[in-house]
Length: 382
Image (cartoon, rainbow, N blue to C red; front, side, top):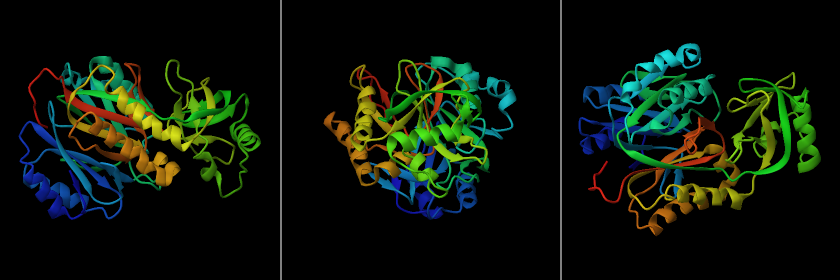
């Protein structure tokens, strides 16, 4: 349900009208413009003993529209209350031990919904720790939360408060099929990352990273860097980490350091092979259709809920054509006679595992999750 308001009382009233059962939790997704008073919202929901979790994003998706104000609310069947993990950046060394106590929550036909502060510095190790515990026993779906200006401040909230550098994991008691595509194409490469540290690429082909990137982009893509336009160009020319059997794993290049380091939205492993990618509007829109079709490769489903996690970078790149991407998803559901309105967020990083492989933090990608029950079981609303 989309609510075109940031008024706390109206949000709370809308949640109360859902009559949330005790074994279900309310998911609250907020757009960053005209935010409500989050502390007041938490207080009012706690007074009513409503379990909830949520986060702030650059925008929301409802049907074929995007919104930069308001809220989306939905209640989900959960195994237990969502799990809040604080201080992700500091906890990377003992994350395995921290998550071990949650392993009993895993069971067949469970989906782990993960929302994390996109500015946390240990996202990859956090996701690896989760995957090491549960492997392919659960499905994974999630996103990075935060603000468009890429400044770390509180963006995750639960019954326990309002936090930055945090993540929340909720084990949804429902099956989910997931489609993951991006549609970006190889422009140049391959190039070897000969030195890196976390999300900082220091050397490409044994030379200064920015020098190699600049030369490649300017000589082949007819773009010219100056002191003011780095991101305007780099946002159209991300890295693609070669991943056998899948599309390249996209890494957006956010900025260049004074020493020529390239800082990316996510870790880039040393010795990785990367390509420089380019985008074409039609290919990106088609990627949304492919992601939806992947959700139905194993047969038709009785769909209860469709979640769309679509990178804000795709919206900025596609501009007016972004609506075509959203219409593709909506029309694809309607063509299958599925009476479900797709809901989701304009994310700052996307989280999914691809065909049972490692859990990844993605950039400039669209992830679609279709929560369902098999067609031969009784219908159950969520």
